[in-house]
Amino acid sequence: MNMKRLLSLVAGAALVLALPVQAAAETMDASMAPSGMALVGDTLYVADVCHRAVWTVEDGEAVLLTGRTEVTDLSGQPVAGYNDGPFAQAAFSEPWAIVPYDGGFLVSDTGNHVLRYLDLVEEEVCTAAGTGRADFRDGTGEQAAFDSPTGLAVDNQGTVYIADTGNNVIRCMDEDSKVTTYAGGEEGCALGNLETVQFSGPTGLCWADGVLYVSDTGNHRIVAIADGEAVLVAGAELPGEAAYEGGYLNGPAELARFASPQGVAVGADGTVYVADTGNGAVRAIREGYVTTLLSPDPSGTYPISPRSLLCHGNALYMGDVFAKVLVSLPAKVAEPVFYDVKEETWYAQAVRFTAANGLFAGIEEHVFAPDIPMTRAMLITILARLEGVDTTTGSTWYEAGRQWAMENGISDGTNMDNPLTREQLATMLWRYAGEPAASSLSGYADAAGVSDWAAQAMAWCVEQGIIGGTTATTLSPQTQATRAQVATILMRLVESSGRSSYSAGP
Image (cartoon, rainbow, N blue to C red):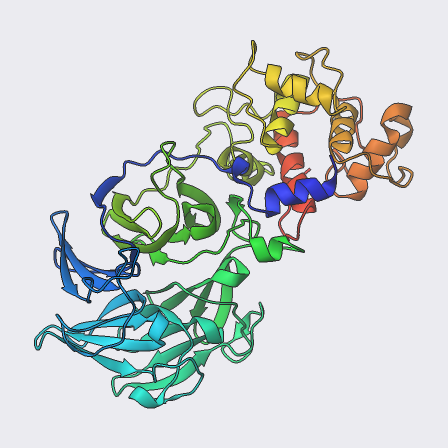
């Protein structure tokens, strides 16, 4: 084991850190690939990217609104087309997003590089903007050009925002169908004002309370634009290969990891919901903290590739384009609550982090016991979980972790019930990291009290910022490591594997 391996676990596409949250989800329809949704009254309007059509859904029943689904290829899938006209004759390529607009609906037809208008009165489809060819040009109506437009959002003044995915920018269109570039330029990951902000393949958009939320898909993050400034909502900047693959990690917003997020929606309480498409999950961002609302069902039905989200009252609608299902679930974020962990304590965030990511939780419901010692069995089980080991097997609750630790040279497997000292903890973490080299330990008055066998391990942990002093001048190597300390140290271990500005107390 080495730090590169750890990095791949927490910054790559590793689902082992996910905390499955059981949500009561109701399947509404199993015949569509819902890439976009809009709700008017009691009727859902659904853009179906697979069947190249737009449907209405009411009382769980889907009815075709427009799109030529009867023209199919040899595999039986509808053939892409581009034809304006009556609903029954109109053809689409990839209808992605749909939003209410001017008494009808606006649809981003991604494969045709245009915006289409659905006139409900005349029951016909026309091109609102775009040439039908991939390009980048501001202008009015069919003089404008897009490259694979996807997400749509409409503000209170009727301005339409378009995720111009292929051009890595956000465009806007006014009531006269005039298209201009709103934010972004060349591909990148910079934040700041509308001229300097950079995106990478943005897709999902949502307008709420004067803020435009953007799923910056290629950068694996969620961005908010308000008052001319683009700021980070959630998503760590990832190094190396992880920057391409994304990751999966709950926790503080700036530390959390996503993999190609697409749909984004905002609840009435300000909670931001994210279709974390690459991870097959629905995530929630509230009060600067990311949790998992819905993770893959054990049966393998859904979510598999969630794309679209729509929040209405206490319900969250999720469209899965691979499983071809539209489901509803309660828009309720469940967070671990421990009555013995106050928010003002130095370890509060770390406890939430470890619990939200399924590393270790309380000793009983709502009781974390931050001050009791961490045992050897507890620690090796946690490290085994980081490696994706199924720790639910074996004759004891820690047996699977014990076997894994012995096989990987992290522990000899003895004295499992004994409390860990801080130097023993450092040694196990050092071994887990691959026994990297470290300078001599200095700077603490009790450095000489570190056992010879633990000296390099403790030095490495201190150098990496994983373990700090119990005071400004003491390491206390022989004292027992508490559960609060271990939670904080584990969070720092994860942080050290990738970039993050987050840190907690001693």
